[in-house]
Image (cartoon, rainbow, N blue to C red; front, side, top):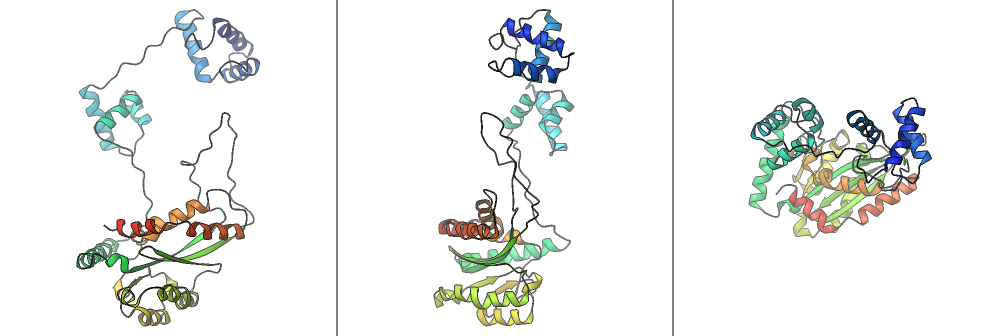
Length: 338
């Protein structure tokens, strides 16, 4: 501990307290902090350093601690890079323990060699054969895009998502700054549960949505096609409507003879779905801008603070959609593929 942090008298008082606490470090820190609230808080780490000074130097005054030498020689760099090549998911703390190199040096070597920590992205599990379908779909999409650079703007992307009371809460990215620990909590596992479902469709920079409480089935989806989707199409000029493609993923409620007939009546053969005129690859929600953009942005806004009631949840959903910039929607549609 540096001399200008605690005076010799402070450290002497600390040692007396440590003796009265029978050498228990945690109790010593608690008693010291309660007895001297105007001094910098004593932590277990600080106390151990002070005690180590007494044992090593036999005096109250803390010895100046020199910084650890920088260890970036070529052998260490090779060892660090080789370690993370074999153990790419390891932590720098584990590498420090295994290699005997300080974490600061490991961080510096990794940064110098353009190594960065990347987060995992959660995707739907794929089955054998799924990759072939995804590649075929993407190749067809690229061909159509090369033939018509405006093709992505002609697609009507659709999806459904459930919004519950608890929603999502990312503890890694959520903080509360304070001079003292307020011990804040975020309640979960409520006894009073509620949820709503949202159907959403986007085309270029246009967006529409429909909130419903029941689980989706074929009859309800047919009604959505005949009302929500039909109203959306009414606002599209006829010359553009003839170029529109309708996308749906082929969930069980989407697959019914009446729905096939309705889609054909509205779009002829310009619709894509599992086993549809243009086959949509199974387990591929990540290919739609609704999945990789819209739902994430909407839910981040909806769940920024705890939801109080179903009415509150619905109001937040409406407000989040209303605040979604049209330019960002259009950018997500094109940037997700181009």
